[in-house]
Length: 340
Ligand SMILES: Nc1ncnc2c1ncn2[C@@H]1O[C@H](COP(=O)(O)OP(=O)(O)OP(=O)(O)O)[C@@H](O)[C@H]1O
Image (cartoon, rainbow, N blue to C red; front, side, top):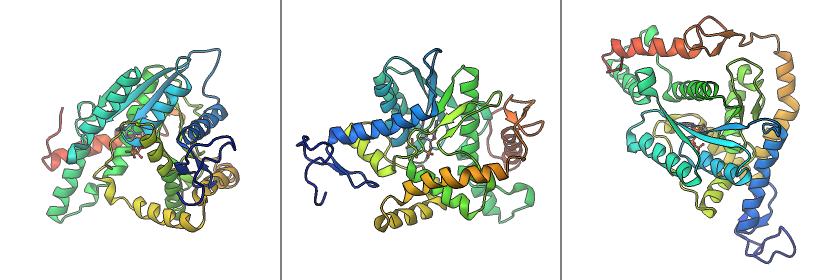
């Protein structure tokens, strides 16, 4: 903390400043910093109108055990102590390196227990027959064989992981009557994904709304990212100051993702263009995304129901079912143990 020694929130606040909000350069004490983040989260919740006075609000928080979703859970419980029914859901992905998945699940459950929030867990190996470790092992086996027949081309672990998580989180929410799912995606992650997808000119991503995906489709739950405008450093600071337990390590497979390099570059730019990431997201979703969405609105809609799992889909069978079926076949072919 250079310059401002004291909190600048109120002239009356004489407390020592502990953190400077990156985009506004406002130095704040612990209590005012925590209040500032809570207020910014609440603002997005109010703007999205996900909480209704006249009906029961059943909200699901997708928990990874990482700092973002743990902080989000804690803020939601503080903001809405009794007028919403809050539940936590953890997807056990079976990542055994450094005990990653097991520890993540223990930490997510522990915060739910502490806050008296019902905790749910879905084990993908039990549901699917394989998990992320199996996909990782398959990749190693194929690499060793030095053969890459077209039909065995395997994408990165993250790509399957995202598909599996989205599927089970949505299915659980639909089957259990939740009105909305909240995830802990933060500003830094979102700015990184936006730049990556911009480089790839991925219109499918670029036309999607930012923090709130309001569903008008049967069997698809609306999704909100309440930490959309809070950056990773602020969340880490919040977790530290408010003593929120979380798994400090990253997923062992994410180290391979190209996103990490883009994130690093964005953080470097932030050093000389303060607030670069927040203004990128604000301006993109205000100015460009609506235009891209309008120009691409005639594309196919998720207006069918998968005959196998009941999820919304473009065709008879959804992408999740097609991908998992193909993966099971490939795993069996390469003699990797699967259930069922
Ligand atoms: N195993 C999981 N089970 C349930 N939800 C998950 C899981 N992994 C991720 N999520 C949800 O997706 C969000 C973004 O995922 P990402 O992989 O970026 O999380 P992370 O960096 O591991 O952890 P976090 O974002 O919670 O700090 C999480 O904040 C959480 O809401």
